[in-house]
Length: 129
Image (cartoon, rainbow, N blue to C red; front, side):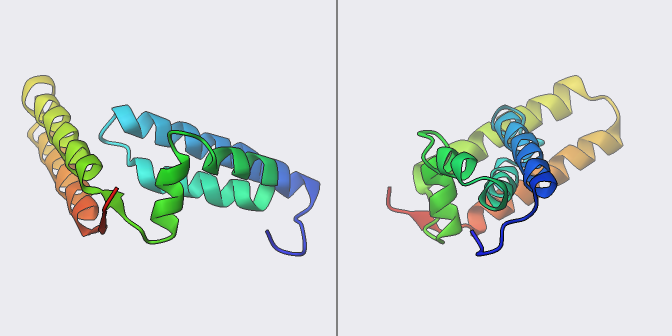
């Protein structure tokens, strides 16, 4: 954290936004249309500026801590996790696009989102974990 702390209102707002982004990141785990990583990183950024306590709790969390630290430090994502994420992404997007959605433009958008998220995941370095 910087030497100069933001005022109380700003710190409170950062904690609220951090919690909001954390919630979106958690939803992104089960909803492939929401990207998990950017929301978890936004949450970590908000918490790091708003509350040392919230930040430490987030990065020491057994589910998100290593994930956030590895990503921020450029260590990448374990190949197994990356492949699982891509498989779940395509399974859920395909099911939704072909069995739930009837509008062709929405189907197209879902496929474009899946391609974008897949590309993003493939460009992240695979770690040895």
